[in-house]
Image (tube, rainbow, N blue to C red):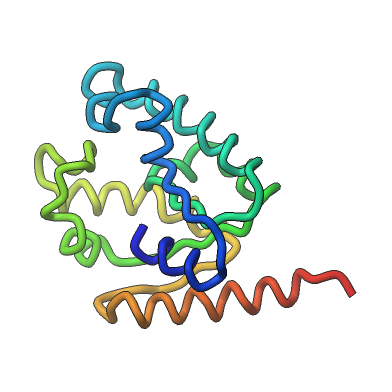
Length: 161
């Protein structure tokens, strides 16, 4: 989300966060949806919200970690957007998320092991993204620079002649 906000600012586009949009649509927080209705209900709502956001015109959309795992969402993203994966090792992600209380999958048990398990499941699918940028502990500015460069190059090659 941090990189997404800065990307949106750099390109003069709106920034949309799918988790925030899900919360607005559901009238409660993501963690409450997980707790009361379960992950499948959340994923269903997330899929519909992302589909709507993709139809709303040019924007930078930050999705939750599991969104791209849904085949329908992945196809919608491929059809209507440029996907960008900010790849990081699970240890780096653990450092970035360890204080967060808003990540239902990481708020129980061993968060680092959960991240390693999720990486094993998700990274092969995430690799289908249009752009993959390796990140680590280089900081927001360096990651933002990499993302702007990659998106600018991609947009330049996608322009009709």
